[in-house]
Image (cartoon, rainbow, N blue to C red; front, side, top):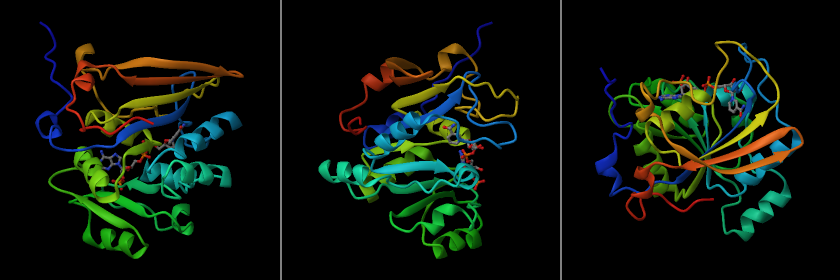
Length: 260
Ligand SMILES: NC(=O)c1ccc[n+]([C@@H]2O[C@H](COP(=O)([O-])OP(=O)(O)OC[C@H]3O[C@@H](n4cnc5c(N)ncnc54)[C@H](OP(=O)(O)O)[C@@H]3O)[C@@H](O)[C@H]2O)c1
């Protein structure tokens, strides 16, 4: 008997009236598709060219989004980069720095995270309604704007739509980790995936990957992307995938904002 397949898009009806940012996932992965070692000792492994590509992408984004564990484990500050990047943002008419968005359903994001030590761009933390009130207040005291997802769990479509309305976010770069990426994909809100393939092998069943979450039980359920660009620099390969499903092309005008 054929496996029953349901659409991964639960937001089809409401999408017609809501506006969402254009979302690009940007990640580096090994030849065995890992984004860190199993013990999380190694979190950065791309070349300096890969780093430059990351900052070039950031320079075009209104917001950067990361999961709480990525922020804590990598010491990410989600900064703008060099004066050159700042100048590029100015020329493009963007705010001097992208809004920094952290996903932390339980509001567990550590007070010790490096991010807090770098004032500047606003920090928004997305939490679930079930997150303890004291934890939410702690994040507010640290200087974050805390968005509480209505209902059960964390509604990524609602969050992105709110970011577009409240902060004018048109282009959002999502920088991992795997759990956040999986949630964005499950919500059917990813427009583009940029991958840097680094010729290393980490192994480890527990090592994080690009999307750590069950997304498809059969091929028809799998989110579909189209290979739009391939570039090789040194021994790294840069892949750019864009949404390739008929759903994307039939989106109502204005529901997703322009690409990068
Ligand atoms: N190679 C690369 O390009 C790259 C890029 C980024 C990250 N990484 C690696 O990826 C690893 C981190 O990835 P990860 O998957 O473990 O963590 P993550 O996605 O960075 O963060 C996970 C946390 O985010 C919150 N979260 C994520 N999805 C959620 C959802 N659907 N609902 C509610 N909250 C949600 C939860 O916070 P609460 O616990 O507060 O609920 C969860 O514990 C690190 O080792 C990092 O080095 C690699």
